[in-house]
Picture 1 (cartoon, one colour):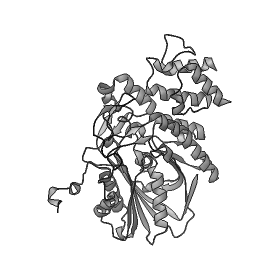
Picture 2 (cartoon, helix red, strand yellow):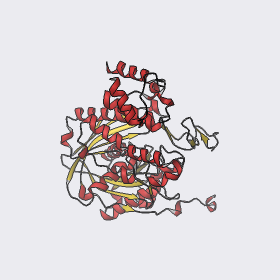
Picture 3 (cartoon, one colour):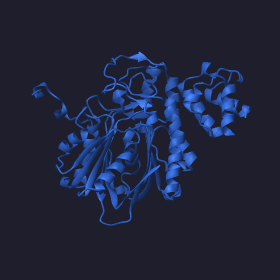
Picture 4 (tube, one colour):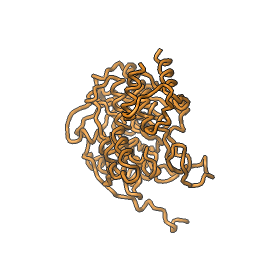
Length: 75
Length: 364
């Protein structure tokens, strides 16, 4: 799951110059903005069949936390 | 889901009016930068929007559409017993704009006139309400006018909304049938627990002390409390979950399948949302016409505009699945039918109702 998740994320955020890590505070990426936020929520819905509520999304800081939330909900 | 069923009624005409103003999203490059504009355009599917001049109200657009319909369909205005105006941009704080339209259209006095304050779900709710009022009245015909000029309360700096919304109005003529087997059905839901998701906080009576002052909000965009604000993520989540779920429930309740419908006419919120609804409800995307690219999101008028844009000039009886969703939060879908020969060509108008301007000489 992690490989697919990172690959999709890089695609959406148009990140080509580095690898992503579970510890990344993704909202601090220079590529992060409201449109990126929308695209990520949509990607998670499309790839993993989970829609994360915005109120929950706000509390998530790292990619690891985001993946944990997806896993929790796909169970 | 609230299910509402209507027998022996039909749509006898549809007319749509748009202003001549067109704004290409490219023209926002200097304001927001090419990169942001192009990303927005790709995600939302908007290349151009319609824009009314400042003095043109939603009812001006709706009026032109209704007038054309009355003339072209040779309607005896005394037979019209219901006039419902759906808009979030009325002419005045009071009275309801439906009365202004009654006057301008020269309707008789044996008529129910009222406004509905709904946005993107407004066409479906408007149909359900108008048909209910007509059915229980002694008159034969009803007019549903949906129109909006969403741009009038947007902050010009709000890149999440200012490139998205278009202005237009339309009129639908509904008629009782003595007999027939046409059935219109609607599935409706509301979620007032999210009333702040799309809101214009000031300008009415709750926040009378708020200054009309532009400030930077948490999202970095400058707007005032008199501007409309949309919590994009909330609305997006709602649109890709609650809306497809409603359509799925509606199909089940009405024992129909997407293959039973010729067309699925969805509120033109954003192309991405249309694709997600298509995927989740399993509707082939070819069945979902698109007009957001050239007109933008037209609030309650998206669906009539979409139908006129795609089917005017043809003659075929279409079974149509419609769905609108937005502020409230409010969402609805429905099963309707109409002969597309009853759709008039789209009218372009910048007409305004100067007699509607209030003058100091009227302070009597």
